[in-house]
Image 1: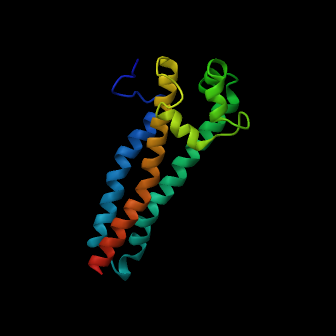
Image 2: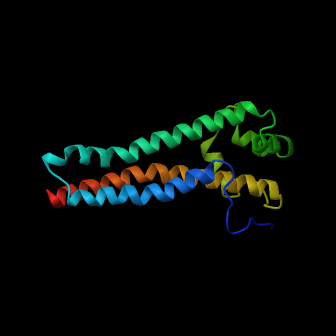
Length: 161
């Protein structure tokens, strides 16, 4: 069975989002921890800023992903991943898109990402699977930064109280 290299190379704009998240996550967490020293009525705008910042980042990153996905989908007639699966693996494509091109079965996508629907011998399918896994990981990182940051901020504010 062929396997992708251990280190995934992020194509296109995603490498910039990854770099941004590597820089932004420590900043966000440092802002949350610094609430221990800067809390109270005189710092209410700082408290609001440090709690709102991860949510604003989430909205911006998801909008960027959404616009990029829509642009990519309608700009290129041969959307590589969908067309490759549709042409070469119609059963897998039908499971992933039960009602046509614009539909997505999320559970089937998860099963596909973890290799349930094929034997793992086609390098293009392995690349598509890896690409989808990395997108999911990145979006989950952006999403989970919000509750983690909020929990730290709330805990710090309760302790510093």
